[in-house]
Image 1 (cartoon, rainbow, N blue to C red):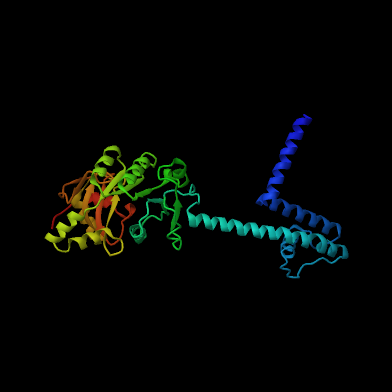
Image 2 (cartoon, helix red, strand yellow):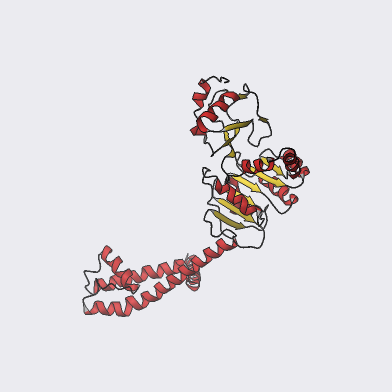
Length: 365
């Protein structure tokens, strides 16, 4: 028993020595509490009754020990003055100095972590993750995300593997994480990929994008949407074969060039439809559960006359694999379907009077 007590005592001594050697927050706090307790006891012993109540002592101790010294409270007895001059102020100054130095060091560490992307983001949820860095394109993507003024206020976390500092340090809406790898489990835990709400994968090359998207697909929540960009359309086909929650995008330069040649202005129309920065834009809204069967014509009429929105298409799935563009007026729309429309701003599901639409038969004018 004695030997066991000795081991515990030695461990305690080593632990305290480690804290005090490193000037940890624990050691500073311990010294501060001990110093305040000793100061209070000595002032009480010296008969300084006006200084020893809890409220008075806390105020007096902080003001005096930090040498601010307003002068509204001070010792009155000769012994009390000796306590303050010999014990309270000299020792208190050293402790307060250590505390300010530790605080400055902690702030410096946090700022460095923010700049270098070493910060821990396990506290985030329902956030937007962007994997990959492109000097011009990434900034434009973030600009368009923030341009949607009615979007859910999801925090944006830019994830890179390049040796770089936070490129959007002046934007408080954008966080920054530098990862060792886009497929490392520990790193993905650090950015809390499991609770992300939206993901964009836009890596340096198609192989990295494919691997990253394939890794993320089973890790995210069921309702999380992943969007991945490829130059090679064969990668799109492969990823679609193995995943059901990744919407793959590839360059449509050839299609846009031909369309703008045949129908001048088409490229400008595409730009406006996809941009949140130039007036009316293309958005999507999911029909909520509990809504009965509707007709495309009913929805088209309602959205145009009540929200100045033009309904373009209806998809039975979130990523638009099964989409009907400009279907007939009798086309059936059900709960869970996704409506794609053009409007001045995004329409939230609870802003649409679904019951009124269901009760109003569509009449062609």
